[in-house]
Length: 323
Image (cartoon, rainbow, N blue to C red; front, side, top):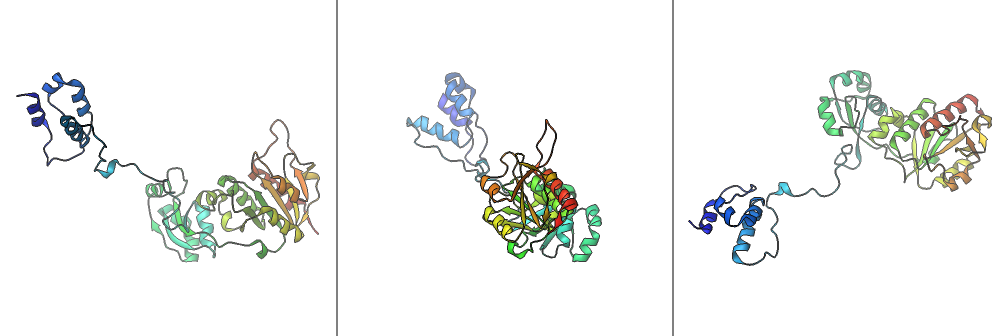
């Protein structure tokens, strides 16, 4: 038996399955080890294509694409597990966030997935709204949201709240204004403090703000469905509208000239806070009536934006007087 006969006898039959790794006769390995090693390490159908090209004496002009679709790479960005197929539908999770969404008459209620324990804790809210539960186990909810979401055994499919315009609200109480704060955890914590201290609304720019979805709602612990969130196109124009309505605009910045504790606060007022690091933008500073700082002690003199909002709200509730 010559080498060519040995090659033919050892090739995979024509009707066999594709996708394996071809092996050649040991006799050919002794005569041409480099070519045999190349063929043995090349998967079908590439191995047979290269063998035919070599035997014919012609170099291949192209490489065939694999027929098995399993080996084709995925294209595009991975789907966000917290958004459903419909772009207007979102997933909220967490006991407090879901309970506040259920009792909010402006919130659309879709499918509700919950464990038996979570359903018992939400029983009164479910009866008041007439919502039904689809029971699930925690592992199913983990696959629905991803491993990093702390769902507490409940997931609600819902829609974004209807938009609220700044002109719809009466100029009273305390407003919170965030200047390009993009972290959903920080914005959620600010919303939670705003709900605790009874703030009138939270104002943010449409751009450079986090989406009002699961992570923010979980951090807000129900505040997203309690405090109105107003998204504006131009923050400086929105601050001007607040000023025209007789609202005192107080910017909080580390380099503020006056202490918040020494500033006379009158209602209605609006606290303006910037992102960590960048702080308030120049145009935002110029639109504020006063620029204050919260007294701290060195060496750590900076506060998280959510902590600063909580301190300012508490101080205003305790000391601010009506005009």
